[in-house]
Length: 223
Image (cartoon, rainbow, N blue to C red; front, side, top):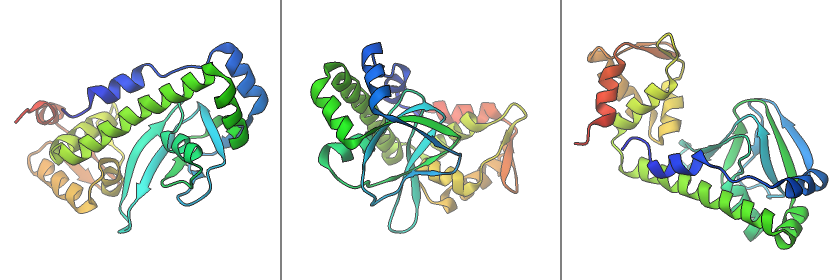
């Protein structure tokens, strides 16, 4: 399967705060605004707050010792970050990093307020743990995908997800490699194979999808 049903289900019905708890969070927290491209947190820094995204999208990623990056998941409106929650609960530094993919607005609870509300509010505890569970399911699905799915199937699905109405895919080989958790050379080799088959047309900074039905066949191939 090119995309996990567990991941889709986890993201389809994110937990929500009730009105009373939302009011408490608004009073005790502060508003954070970050422009696209800004770092939300960096690996090794102390985890001091619990953000709930109000608008925009944040990409959470991990960089290995060899410099290779992998996108772990994205956090959108109404969602929280499982790595942040885990770090707050064990009083640990961040072991990944997050960057704003778009302009982002978030409601942020300082660590002390997060812990106090977690102890005093059943509604807030339910929100935190349901969000944690849903995001963890999504992360496990991501690990399963990277570990066990064929790279040509995953690349085909990524292209189909990213293609514009004009057939253009404005992603570099490196960006695709980060999304797929593989080496840029692997992505380049597969894209060359797709081009030789007449399915895509490569150009600098991206490529054009010529035969989407061919990629759909790869995605749905169970062999």
